[in-house]
Image 1 (cartoon, rainbow, N blue to C red):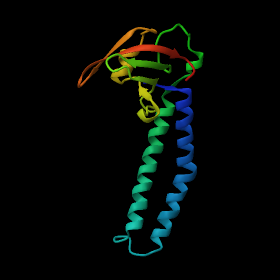
Image 2: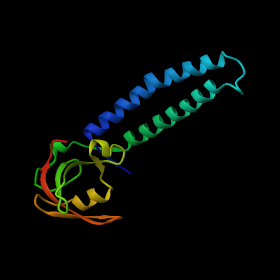
Image 3: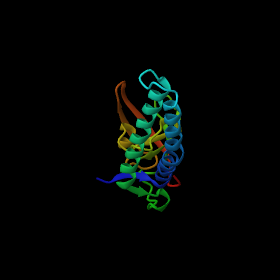
Image 4: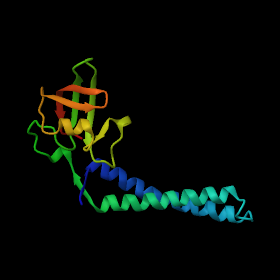
Length: 158
């Protein structure tokens, strides 16, 4: 099954995969070798920590490889600019209740990061926004109740 991902997100995952393979993996292999040299492995905390780190790195390499091999890369700058919210766009919103402004980019699950205002296409906010236009009201179903956002702007420069 194809996994949607923005061009920028794909590049970031490729960079992470390269760093894991060519920097982190060799470093942890060297740490394991050094810990082995200290003797008894049963009571060697450095060895066990390095092996655990190696396991994490190998798992992440496998995960990223799988995601990238199934990725459907979407470049938001090439999308038709028809004024609707679609995957990859940046959306400026106003919370109708408290008039707080917020900006989100709608991205794939593997590149979402709320600290960077990048929300997953499968999130309740993104699902409420898809297909809407500027000045439309999107109602987000939240555990605390419905939240209404007015769409101020839609940008295709993600």
